[in-house]
Image (tube, rainbow, N blue to C red; front, top):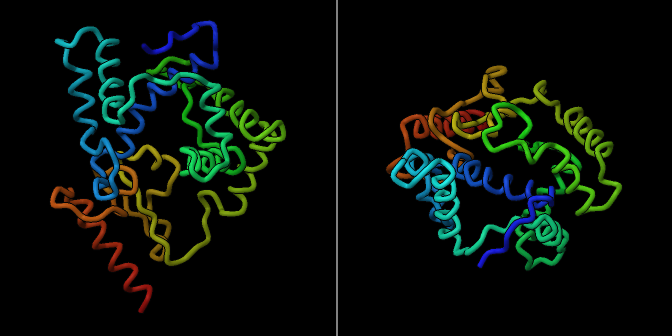
Length: 241
């Protein structure tokens, strides 16, 4: 049986709610991306699938449907229980061995968020669809718990300011760069979606998710994605001539 959660352990409660919200975030981020070629699991779980589950009242009340989405993803990844342990997560991300699960990128990405980006998906803004139990300090605490006390709010703020200053934030001074985003990809909110100049064009692809243009083509690609790949090809060809 799965462990019962201690509702007085705020870190575990935050981890549970963040994990459950992450179910939806992951599905949205990679919605219909052509990732099956790389062996990714769950590529058939799309926004449509999740919405169908969440709107199927025959399953039960909303919380039961919410659990059904979680169960679907657990089954997909051959997991029995939802690991809500904050300590387990920190222990995993402290592991520096190459063959660890965090060594595939989780630890490295977390380090970048703690020193360069921030980028945290918190529960702080209304309408609090997933509660308000994983606010900003839940994530900044992880930085210190994983990498040490030096990785505090001050270091993070300095790192973010340096990143924006070094790379130009939204005021980029570059040429021959195309900025590509999908309207469904949540990360587009941090990107450039309107062309800056002829040598700094932006392509905002209707109906696609994260990095859709970077995956192999598929017969199911929407027209906007097909057109975007062609436009990118023509731009790069012109710049290389």
